[in-house]
Length: 396
Image (cartoon, rainbow, N blue to C red; front, top):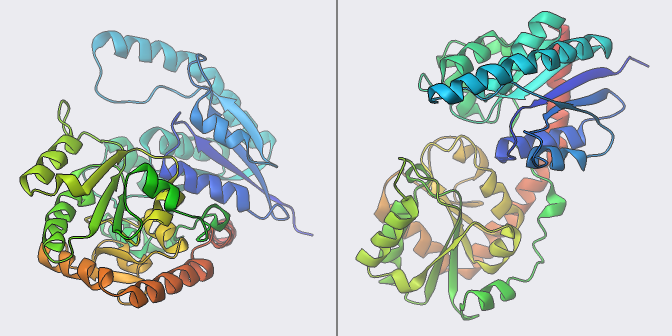
């Protein structure tokens, strides 16, 4: 039997965003007959257990190494810079120990996100130890990203991208196509049960059972399209009054000192739909939100993939989105949802009306979307793709 391949995942971030969740699903589902999974995760500053470490500790059959990473780089005052320099010096011992760990355990693949610190650790460790570095991109790559991140991505032995859209952006940036592996995202289907009852959420939010509900789940900032969605919703209500819109997600200020959610609330008042829009803030029960809605919509601009579309589809909800970025690779127009041109508010409103008026179409699209996720977008398929790519990288 061939020797198992050691793979080391780098988690230098204390938080646990969508990219970390994708990597955790790969870790959980990698074939243990072929791979030995190692994880180097930050221990934080010692005052509390980082969310990333807590989540990773729950995954069975991994070798978890708590590591002190160098501080994240970014704008800082002189005092913060001095503290960062001292911390970086203190972390040098852990870096040398991690380098030794890679060699001692025969690790042949190092895998990280494109975040500057994670990717830099990945590439430098790979160069020093002889392991192959794989940087996993979850965003559209462009010249706007930091010099450190661009340095790491360009020098990594291979890049994983989450969609053909991201792959094409990488190629335009000069990454050799032969070193890019498109590994579309997947989700753990056991977390998304379409039989969940959404009536409790409706009661909580004071939404009558016979009211049609649109739901939009995302961080709140302009590229996610909530501004255009509100304008479209105002057009929809003029035709179908018995409808509510749930805007679910935490505020993500685009400019320090401003709040996009407050701008959205002001726009709802201006459009005279504030009584029909519910801003829930962040929710940890997204499956229940999906179960409570009739249609999911997020007209995000240049979305690199859109995990939330998979989640809605897994819950048998039709999707309203826009036809750009990686979205058409996830949502099939006229089959699992309806796509409109980006920033086209009347077309967005028309697509929403089409689904609100036709229950049979909603059911048909919802069933097709669930089947599509089952066939193409499971976490198990994503991990198989990653494993096959590792083998190709090693044999290249």
